[in-house]
Amino acid sequence: MEGATIVQQILKALDLHSGKIQQQMKEMEDRLRTEIQDTESRLRVEIQDTESRLRAEIQDTENRLRAEIQDTENRLYAKIRETEDRLHQKLLDLEKRTDARFERLETKMNYWRLEWSETQETVDFLARKTLQHERKLRSRAGQNEIS
Image 1 (cartoon, rainbow, N blue to C red):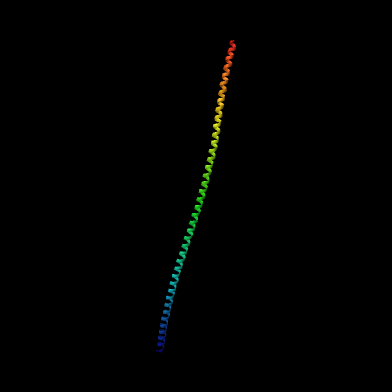
Image 2 (spheres, rainbow, N blue to C red):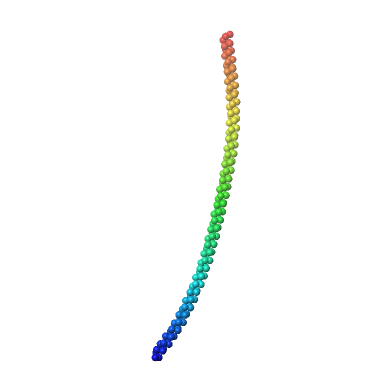
């Protein structure tokens, strides 16, 4: 029997030792599970922080780009208005110069009309005088023939 007692004692020792090993494995599993959960929680927090920072950076970049676009748009509109004003002023200047030239042409035309009218009056006067002289000459020529 002694062999059976030894086997039983070995089995009991193995059973006791296996229980300790199972308990140690259970404790190790619990520690690992806790450590994994802690690591997972830290990583989730870190991911959320990173996501928040990235979203904030994206929002900041978007705001800066929008501001730059608005600034560029404002500068372009100002440049367009400035060019438009310059062109408008050039058009007004051109109109003034054209009006002045037309006024000078009109003045010249009026002067030429006056000159032409005076020339016409002179031609009419000379034509009347020529007719009067021709009548006188005919009348004297007719008187000379009669006498």
